[in-house]
Length: 381
Image 1: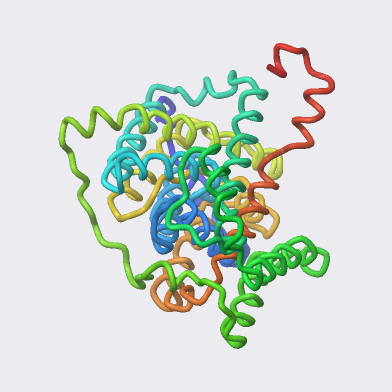
Image 2: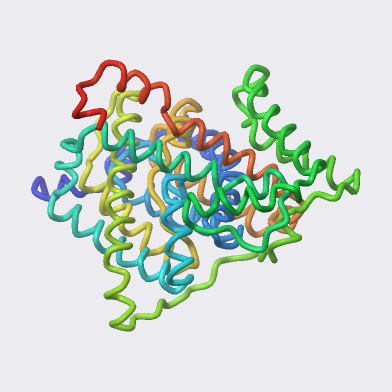
């Protein structure tokens, strides 16, 4: 049994001495984290080039299995900003079938990494690499929101960064001033709301306020419903195309997804360990991430990993066992079943502003500036 301890999920060890009091804390934390995850899951799905409900499929299915089988007491799994640019590029080149297969293959790779104890090696990745990588993704995310934030009349947005900026420049004359005004309002709410309340996320308040203004004011601002058909209900089981040709093409994208998921999830585990004074099981976490991504692919979702911001919110609100993460997934499932049609009223510019804040927060630009000022030139390069 001791030989298998390194891959034993934390759920099975924390549940042995589980109390009613801790369940209440986990329940409250799980519901609060679900409220935080709701707008992010929708926004990240749209930014990735998939339908809004697929972000919730990912948070529900992958989020449940990452908590249930992972190696952290408090990890919250789901779609994250780090994957946006990668997913968008895969869909642009290979379509949804390619993304589904790549996610499934990445899940298998993660399980293999956990069994082979690769989780112990993640700590040797230089911090400067993860900083630069994260900053690059943050810039890509913010750049991808300009069209919806300004309400530009464009049929499609190029996947490449420089081509994207050039396309924006060509269509800048089509800016929608009501759209921009609503987007700025959403930004202002998210920036200043935390001064009033830390419990209710500013992104949710921004969605409620701007949706009400656009709906009751009949403003000419595009909403999710104008661009997407939102499906309520349970995700359906899907079998990916397993042709040898596509499998061969997806090896590189799948490896990229697996490595990014491993790094981000284990970094999140390290951060949360410091918050609760605990110790995660890195290899069990990789296996849980692998199963979560496989299940996400089979039920119409996109790649998932541990979400540092949502995990921190879980800890701050009293979550101390994987039950909180499972409650978060089940709460989102109820929202998916009964409230999803109302999501069609959300302005696209509001979601763009949410992702701009996400990109800013994940950029770590202050750390990068300090590193450039103090670190050796080799590290800076």
